Every structure is written in structure tokens, then in C-alpha cells.
Image 1 (cartoon, rainbow, N blue to C red):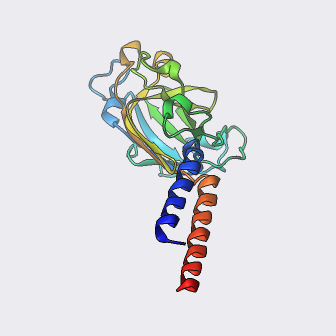
Image 2: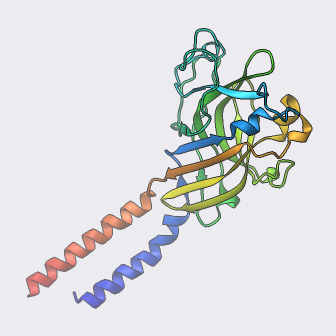
Length: 257
């Protein structure tokens, strides 16, 4: 087989298979990282001086084995001794698997997001589970805990009161409610990876219930999400087929030589 014929055959194979390669991708791993602005948190609820802070991060739990009762216990469950403020940056949530096990009082979500890389927001379905719970304290009684998030896309949230992009974090800890709207989002997707970055804002639902209507739309920090996406099965089949084809061609050419 002449090289020119082999090349033409490989190009034809690519053209035949490539649509199935790019038709869908599935997220199975990755990391969502929050960098919260402690000063913005401190000044919520018409508290411009931030003294005492309106709300501050006191613990960040990533263990999937902690119960809700443990997370809510500020006396006995402390990764950092005491109940002082901890840094609210580099808060990394790992993507969960396709199935999860929940201790009592938890609502960790499974990951099942699929999308077409050529039309991310038009085809994204399902969710990305993010293990972790934030525990806040502040100038109020008790605690404010939020987490067991699911990263989702909902076109009806585009342009909401927080300036939503459609991407948001659904809080599932305690009860399901949109927790954060992701705004000013920069997205990049292909069959092998998905990345998002932008601004974090408390959702209008959370702001109206726990803070003040004047706080809706205020930036609370930034986020990044990076996920390698497994190569679709069709691509593996195509790759192995091409390798086999090249091997056969080389053996034939060597035999003829």
C-alpha cells in the first residue's frame, strides 16, 4: 500500500468518526476552587465597618464521612482549634463520583453532567457534585452552614437579580436552595476538558432570606473549575483502529520491499 493511499484512508476514517467523538462528553473528575473575599462577607447586611464581621468563615469541611450533627457542633468538631476566622481562599472541592453514600444529615450529590463541547450551555444536563461544607459564624446567633453543592446550569437564571450566567451552585446541606450564582463566567470546553471561572455572588434566594436586599449582586469572591473529561469510547476505538491500520500497512510495505 502506498503512503498516499494510507493517508487518504486515515483522513476518511477521521471524517467518518469525528462527529461521534465530539457529540458528548461526561465529567467524572476535577476540582472547584473558591476564593472568598472576607471583607465583602464582613460588610454584608448593612455593616459597612465589618466590625464585628457580619459573617466569616470558621471551618471548611471536606470529609464525606462527617454527619450533619458533627458539622453543626462548634464545640466538638473543629479542624482548627477554637471558633476564630480562617482564611477563605483556596477552598477546593473535589468532584464526586457517579454514586455517593451520605452519613446522617448530609446530602452529598453524585456527578452526572454531560454536554456537547460545541454547544456547552445549550446541552449541559445533569450536575457536578462537590463534596464539602462551609461553616460560617458572625454577628448572629448559631451558625450559617452551606454546602454539599451541585454545580448546575439553568438558562432561566441568566440575567437574574444577581446577574447570573445560568451556572450556579445548588446548596443541598440542610435543604435544597440555590446558594451561589456564578457570574462573569469564562468557559472553555472540548471533548477532553471543561473549565469555568468567574465571580461568586450569593444567590438572590439566599441574600433575601439571610442578608439584605441591598446585598443582592455584590461580589463575594471568585472561583475556578477545571475538569479533565474522559475520552469518549468512539475515540478509543478510532485510535486503536488507526494504529492497527498503520501496522498492517507497514508490514505490507516491508514485505514488498
